[in-house]
Image 1 (cartoon, rainbow, N blue to C red):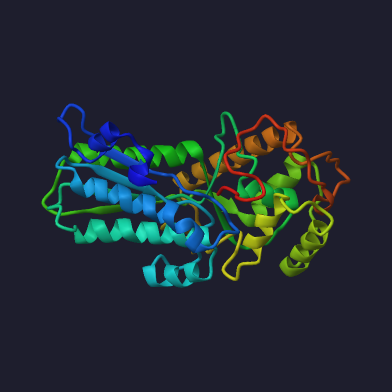
Image 2: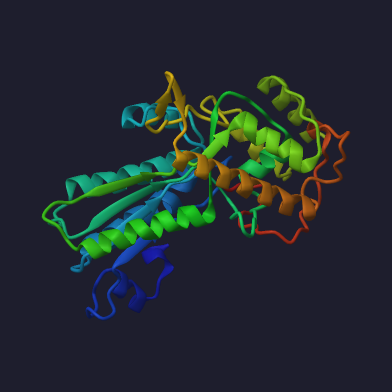
Length: 334
């Protein structure tokens, strides 16, 4: 779609072909087509193309612009080095590959400059899985995380990076605003915000068990996926579990990742979490509980009793009054 589908006057404002009173000072790029089963080539034009178009518009603008790019999804266990991350992404689905390429484009432009003389600032926000807030808990019913709970897959000993939508939005807007207020500098800069809020995978499943009143039976991942495949053979072609299985079969997939630990206090040689981390964990626990309560209240998980095992919960109707933004059966949100 040419010029992002904008009208000519809107495109002129985006590219700075306007007066200073009309100019745009900040761009937050948080849009992408989410289809787990689609290959990179099918998503490149929308996901990577839009990033190139926005960077091009930024380059053309004579005014300083603060550009923020938001990544999303299950975090990698890599050490944060781009080479390690690239190796992980090479084994991932097409959607994750387009997000990685887009981030690389933003970083390359920010660090190399492409001749913009340092007038623009760049910020990358990397949340993990995104859920509804603690106050309202409005979940997206086709989010990867809740589909996973609905289909009952588990693993332990790993860190599940989860942040509510308010935290992600705040980090994106704050990073953009700080860059705007700092003004143009002599050199280009690239700020990266890794949102590390989350819970241990086993704690996540403990919360699910408590809130849903259902038992969890640990299964080998391959065996569990086999059960879901057997079930799908009896269901319609466009069933929402199909993209979920595609994700779980990826060689690079883990529900959790090795946690990027903050510096710890040590008491008698034992590491303790900081007060800030403890507060963050408590907030995540409350947020997850609220999301689960809302999903349960609208029947997302079907009829569950204390004697129900999660691997036996049937798929329920999609006619629920919760937020949904993807085309079910084709895509799934992170």
